[in-house]
Length: 215
Image (cartoon, rainbow, N blue to C red; front, side, top):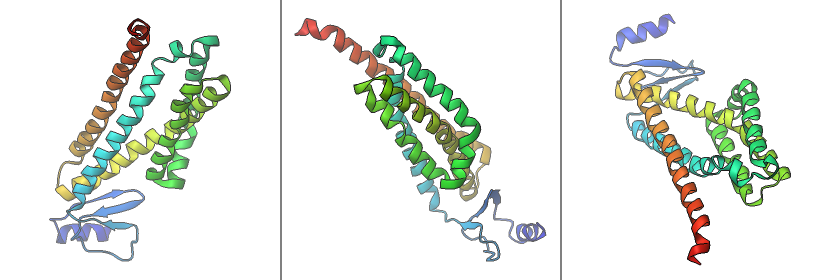
């Protein structure tokens, strides 16, 4: 701790922050080879960070356009024997249980990036099986989605927080302001997914209702 304070006093132009389990510094910060947990980043890294924020936001929006569009119509599209309602119950029950156990373990084992990838892949079966909705297909797919959704959302939050801290160091900005900005961009895209999904669902229902008259 004393060494870190000395470095700060002799090179006051450099900011530093600890992002456990690693430490991130600006590119010109003197490297201490005794601490291999440090990652040195360049000023150009800010453009890669902005690109990553845009990519992760657009990916989440695209995924939830498909997911929310089917989710909002479950009780109507799969009304027979209450399949849609039961599938939704499976999603949220498994998600609640997963929230208590899985996020910390999964992020620790496979990192935030792969937790995001695995979580988003696990949404695909539930969305695709709307074309073949049965108790033996939709309910297991819904449970899988719920289990994966909890660590996926935790990984989103962790990843955005970490890159916000790095971006704040590089640009010498207020860390709270950067975190707020990045989360604002992300949730702007996510909320738009609900709007787009509902519009597409409405268009689909309209086509189903009026297509016999057109034909």
